[in-house]
Amino acid sequence: MRSLMSATILDGKALAARMRKTLADEVSELTEKHGRAPGLAVILVGSDPASQVYVRNKKSACANMGIESFSHDLPADTTQQHLLGLISELNASPKVDGILVQLPVPNHINPDSLIEAIDPGKDVDGFHPYNVGRLAARKPALRSCTPYGCMKLLEETGMDLHGKECIIVGASNIVGRPMALELLLAGSTVTISHKFTRNLCSHVERADIVVAAAGKQGLIKGEWIKPGATVIDVGIHRLEDGSLTGDVEFEAAAERAAWITPVPGGVGPMTITMLLANTVDAFKTHVGDA
Ligand code: NAD
Image (cartoon, rainbow, N blue to C red; front, side):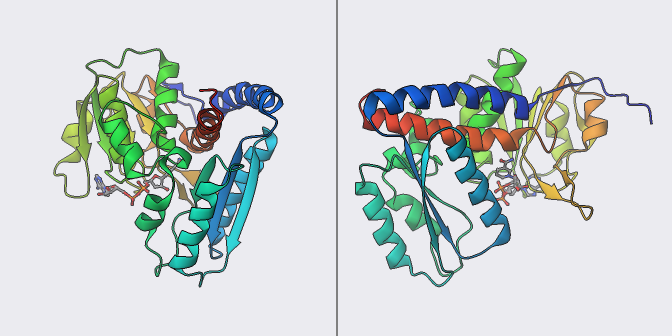
């Protein structure tokens, strides 16, 4: 079938590879200079298959660039108290620069209390209220990885973000809200939509930048996209044949957009890359090399 696509692909896989190469060189220099590698502690509670894959990918990305990872794979019945004790030990450990709790955690655990127990200087996911607050106050410290990765993708377009009309579709703590704060910091005019938003189409139609993060397959129709807009698709959905797709009708949107991220190969590789970048930044702060 003839493709009518006019958009340029924002290739997250290629950008992530370039950034990881630069980061690996930096890690190698820093390790030699300071006598230890940056360290990332990864806490996994239970045996959710998707979480196991995410954790495996994060650990192998660390290994590939010389970041040391410390695994804490714990049974599903681990208590909240035990986890808080572990986080306290990791906060105090001089070898640990970053602490990551893989979400979701089992129902008997309160994820917010775990996140809030992490030393904000080691919160490499950027979920701690301190780090979210820093971003809100225009003094970003450790930034939430997925929105941070989306900003790096937007940088690739070379566009000036000042005054751009943006619609964020989704308002979660880990994607939509921090994404809105990132774009606000960059001088864009931001609309945040969520499950109670009426007439989503009318918001998307006037947007120069669409960030789709509702977790609803194909929610954003191609015909809603303003010609020349930039479309960042954060959504990830696995189809029956095993392939992945996003929240945006890709083919139809690509006929109208100027720039678009694919799924897979768009935002996903950038999220892990920004986790690595945050770990290196946290290391530099800890060793006084920031
Ligand atoms: P979530 O379920 O926590 O939040 C979804 C948000 O979308 C909510 O704020 C909800 O109000 C909003 N929403 C639901 N229906 C809507 C509608 N019709 N119109 C507008 N808003 C609507 O999900 P999340 O954790 O933010 O993740 C969103 C998606 O992004 C998922 O598909 C997830 O798998 C994916 N994700 C991808 C990455 C990545 O690295 N690529 C990282 C995190 C999440």
